[in-house]
Image (cartoon, rainbow, N blue to C red; front, side):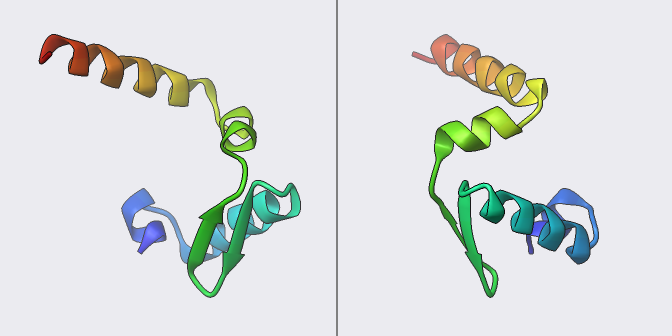
Length: 64
């Protein structure tokens, strides 16, 4: 399901999840993903993550 949402092959998700698990950022087993370190996940993401978060926060502020 995650691969379909991201528009990538399932093997790409498996490789990325394996890397994040080796880094201690997530726990991944049989399609179940548990976030262990949000800070680690944010550090391993690209700058676009923070751009999306900032835009989301600005959008919420408009509707308050």
